[in-house]
Length: 279
Image (cartoon, rainbow, N blue to C red; front, side, top):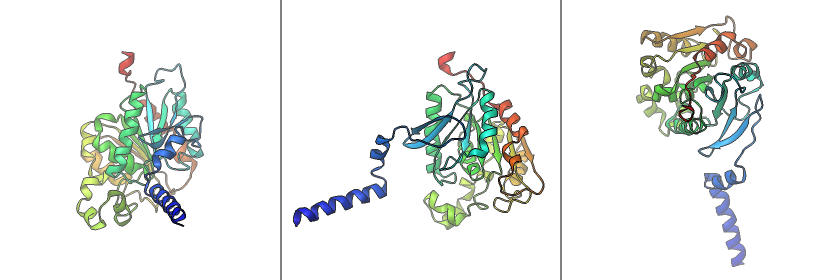
């Protein structure tokens, strides 16, 4: 009976450790190359213990092995098939696409540390230290928050109806958990964390920005996000190109994902810096 009770306690402890994340190392060790469904052929790997992906640019082109686009959010199901056309244009220009799953981090310090891990891994692999950041929807919070901390490591930002304000989405009550503070404290410290309030460092570094955002977006309203970001960025002396498709909301309209102007912007600003190992 004692042995049975001890065995049951052992099992319960193991389950508790797994639920709390202590068992994560064992799971990762069994799957060092996690499989992820991608819109184009690519590589799945772990960076800092988090699932990440890389779709290489086509070889033999000037930017091959050097330039890359940092896509967010990388969550189950994202990037999706709707990004296929856009990614192929980048790939055909010799530009890689990569991303890392930071969970529903909303641009929090914890999420930024996950992004640090991917950046370090990509540089280790010989890619440029200055990717173009591409934020889709809430990926805007992730990419812009990291960019505000590291303007020297950003060649440009592009967004597809990007979230630029925590107040707008997901709302401070919902976001506060990711920041490890109460909603009341997040209100008081909003300027410290909110992307739309932290654009000055990027403007000073002359990081060009682009966004395509529908004028009837009810989920991520244009005026409180890309519209406000563009207004403040220009006021700070930065370049922000904003394309506003009329009558479009937060949807899967093809024009968002097959936007030639966005593709041209990314290709134009993709950093062609040669890795140190090649110099």
